[in-house]
Image (cartoon, rainbow, N blue to C red):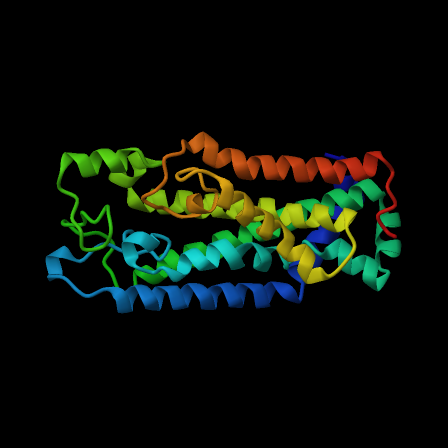
Length: 285
């Protein structure tokens, strides 16, 4: 990474711009509203049990859509999460070119520093915003459910106790199954971090796309999500990219496969940003 980013202060400038972005509070509020609706759905779909059998807040986290019956969360993370978090700062270059501000910002250091700092902030803002909202969604579960229960055996769908060896064997094939049986809160945290990483990767992809393509802002924001969903549709069952954003029963891919997808997106996007600088592409046009 270009050392001039730090020396020139361009990264600090871009971070300040990202934190002062008018889109940031709207994106956070929209995501907060959506996870709150998902939490309310999980409460309404919970038909009740004896006091000693109430599942814990870890099981009733809205991210556990198949277990908490908060099915809206899958729609949120598959269709809305990436465009909303990318909107925070991924279109900074697009907006700078449209406002003709890039001609004043880029000369303050170098074109490489300008592009790299924008890429880092795009990834970072999407990562932090996603992690913050998903952690809040876990905190919401404590409003209605206990932190832990002695009979929290709802590893499958809510209300279906896992009792047979076959059921446990099936669950043992899931990614991060050791956390599923050992510490559900760590499992939920792992998925929060994973989704945040994915959101950062998709935001970086949107930023890279804005370097090479001109057009509508909404189209650039939605393009990575459309490609993501299209790629998920052609993958075999168990290896569907979208299925790995939240805990589920139909996952058989190893953790390495799960991590490879966002890592590859990040790598290709970073190379695309770097290539535009190496080719001395005039990205300000």
